[in-house]
Structure formats: structure tokens, C-alpha cells
Image 1 (cartoon, helix red, strand yellow):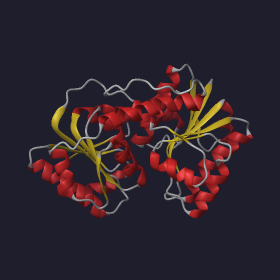
Image 2 (cartoon, rainbow, N blue to C red):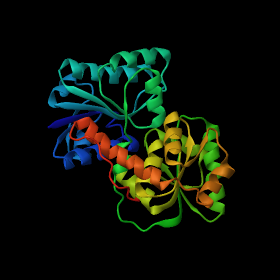
Image 3 (tube, rainbow, N blue to C red):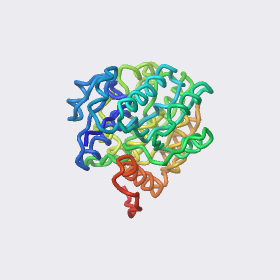
Length: 330
């Protein structure tokens, strides 16, 4: 079967590329061919080894038997109403073309009242799998039936690498205000003076550089390659991240992490994994202490999320009734 994947792919965002990488690996392991809608089809073909069509070409929807809309945070209008309208249009057009569509491992919200009405109408009769408990509860309040999955990027396997316990990754995000970035700067300085190696890691080159003027004097790396992020996460002793997939790839690598939450999806993941987190603008002293004294997530909860991610493919593909597998510490 040819499975299509529609999301925020081809825009040099390491988080979304991690989602696509995980989906591709899982689908190929199950014997399926993958077609992705992308903002840069050539790059997507080269980096992921799959077929890709341009996300603005409606004829590309004809190329797959089943479309997975997701993963990611697509069903929200906080970014823009046009973004929400685009993804709902993809869903509607695929259904008009008599393609099976599954909303796959997404967050739900934030949505305005206008956005809520649009989503309620568009998702009628569509199988919905959401990646976190907060989104599931929101869907229930809106009268949208949904199943609980998890972010596919949790299923990525880290490479063999020697862990450097004194290395702390600090992952900021642009567009959240200077106070939050100042919190990360003070945190990074405190960790450095306590003998830690600090690496500022930007997951969306071309966008996140705006924070660097507020984060001077520290080593910086920029990458949109999820494999590189996973390598660094596995190498580090601790990860402090504003970006969701900084946390998710740390969890996949078995590296402890803490969050500075700018968005409900970040707080939702921290809560589900039992990880330490703060809302903006945050407290740099407490955040640095989380790294210094090893505030760990609940690894059993992380394993449960990985199992939910695996089972979500069974649900979406209709291959099996989900069964519980034994938890393995990762």
C-alpha cells in the first residue's frame, strides 16, 4: 500500500523532520511505500529516501491509498488561520478523491472559537489519533471522537555514542519574547560556572538565529537534521528545551530533560512524562538546578508513550487490534 503523509515537512524544522523520519521508518518496516507532501520535495526525497510531491499540488493526493494527516501541531490557529485552513483543505480534498484519511498523532489547539467550529465540521467521520492527553480531553469537549497515540519521533533509535555527563544541551525557540530567552541565558551561564559544558542547539535554522544576540558567549550549533539532534541528545547528560522535539528526542535517547514551555503541547509532553517544566518566562535558578541535580522524567511513562506510538500505527493502518507489549527501558 502507498501511504501518504501530510504535515509541515520540507521547511528545515528538525522536529517535523524527526516525525517524518520516524513515520517513514515504521511504514517501510511494515512493507508500505511512502509519499510525503513537502515544501521542498527534492530535499525530502534526498533526506528520507521516499517519494515526495509539492504540498501545494492537489494532484499529489492521487498518489496514495491512505493519507496520514500529521503528525505535529497542525490543528491550531495560533500560528495563523491560513495554516489551519490549508490542512483542513488537504483533508477535505483527499476525502473528495475517495482516499482514506486519518488524523495522525497530532496535538489539538490552541483554537479560536472560529477554528473550533471549522475543525468540528472537518473531522466528522474522520478517524482521529491525538498525541497527548490534554488534546484528547479538548477533543472530547468539542464532541470529536478520538484515540490516544503519541509522537512518532519517540520511536527513533539513538546511535551508539559515549555519553558526556557534563554536556547540557540548551534548545531555545525564536518568537517567544526576550524574557524567556533571558531565562535560558542566565541558566546557561549558571551551568557553565558550575563546570558544565553548554551547547546552544537551534532546531530551525533560518528562524531561530534571532535568539542568538540574547545568548552570547556559548557554543552554538544549528541543524535541521533529526539524526544529528538525536546524536547530540544521546551524547548529552541533560537537555533543557523550549522546543517540543528537543524534549522528545531526549526521551528517545534516554537522556533526562526539563522544559521551558511556550505552548500547551510542550507542557502536555512534560506532564505525561513526569518531567520538570516551567511556564514562561521561567526561573533560571530552578531550571539550572534541575540539570545540576538530575531532575529525571519517569522513564516508565516514557516507555508507555513509546508503546502508544507503536500502537497508533496499528490503529491508523487497520492492521491489528492494539495489544500491550512488555515495557523496555530505553
